Length: 279
Image 1 (cartoon, rainbow, N blue to C red):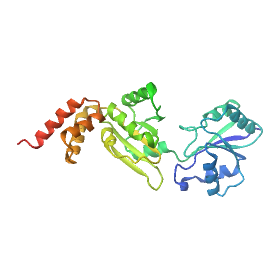
Image 2: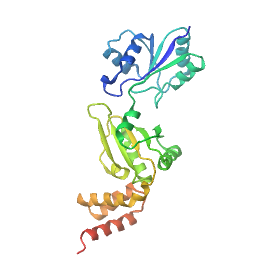
Image 3: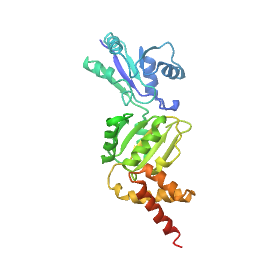
Image 4: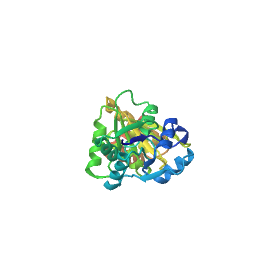
């Protein structure tokens, strides 16, 4: 009789979020397939679990390792699949093992729990129903451009993951495509330095973002928000003027964030300056 593959959700930051069922499952299985064995070993130690067989299963796992794990399952071993944080197979390794096990008729059981996707959706205030999850965007090229266009055209809110080194660039590109779209940037969910910043994409792109930790980004669905673009650009211009920036500096910075020429933005800056001080 074959064993069972358990897909186990683990904490995304706060170890107190591990469920009793997840802990019990990790105790009972004979083997754990882990994205990072060192991090998983630390979690097991926290749970008082020692001498557990671990197999590395990261994004670059060779086919032979997946096959070996399926053979262990066929031989009657119970195996837990875990990722570094959150739910396996959600923008994380594991799909190949789940797919192969299911094809062999092996029972696959979900042990649900922490998820950065659902955590972000629940606190964003931007999702009332269906949403689109895209995970990590391609780093460059046409695939990335297509993804940005897909987000801009999506009637449903979109949830993304992003690395700290790329969060500024991603916010800038999103702001260029849809400056007035509301969004929520969530950093270090469930951890000590958890942070949620809300605003339009053009406002968020202009902020100083702490480039540390894990980022989840929720972007409002298209709806009718594009009609507010001019209002949000005016607000951003006003904030820069209030901060003491010169009209030329404001035009430079704002035109870099929105899909408009510097000449157009500079003309708008001068209009707002004259409106503020008609004399």
